[in-house]
Image (spheres, rainbow, N blue to C red):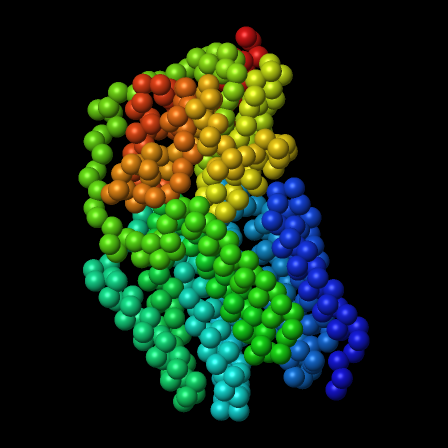
Length: 464
């Protein structure tokens, strides 16, 4: 049966929307439009698959009531989750939804394998096996990433005894089982492959921690895209191939760019914990003197500055203080003070976390400056105001070869004339190491919830 023209046109339209969506997501200014275009493309793709299912799946749609029930349940869960999620929980949701996508691709390919048996061609069988492996790795790894971000388990690297050898052995066994399944497709081998693939997902993510989590999220996202593209080949669905390839390619490029921003190769991110040397524990924070400041002190410091750079971090998102920080910046701007935001590529818990957070508060895009652009300006900066960031401004990344973040380019706040840290406590950052800038004589610490502290600073600034 020849595919009707309207189906092909719908496929083309959805594909174009996916490409435009990806282009829109490349900039904060067009990210909202990009999301809407992507959602429109996904809606078209789903509608075409549903109303003309026989062309996509080789026969008329079966089990229609179950499909409708699944659509309703999934839509309700997705709607409620998207409406209720806090900005601080967005990385966890991205990891969870990404895992669901990889798991879905693996399940579909598993069912296709069990249904087709020995009737599939070698190429189709290879694509099915590839989808099972990559989708399962993405599912298990994403769930573990979610647990780390949600603090259901430690966020630090977990290195099991003989971990590198166990991971290598599991990788070889997975590849071997995949090859054997293509040569001799049996259900028992399929179940073995599923178990090995899920284990690989866990083993790959366990030794990753700290500031490396955003890179792993991006990598697993690329895995999910590749598994979806391969499942599209298995099902003969052009849209799945297009969408999966776009996600896989963009995720791979983003992972590479983030690894470069971290200053070390991806292999070091994934396997560096196996070779890292133990670092000496820092002494108790209370034994080392720090200089505390009041909101009034900070307000005076800011009011008499000529140039201020604000470094937002995860603590800003936790406190939901993005609107308060924007109000502070507007007050400083009204006094003729130059203010910029310094955005580190991996600040927060996911790529672009700070850009999204500040865009939510309608912060002008021209005030957001990337690390390479803003770093030369710190020596001429009167006050660097660090709100909830730690690892991305930690000089240990430059100076301490034993530190887990060594080699990661940082924002050079220690080069500013004065540094103000807004922190809840002296607790180390996500990487679990002390930041020596906190103990520098030119650094002042304002303790407390970031939103409450900033509100007090704003009030004090208005009174000057």
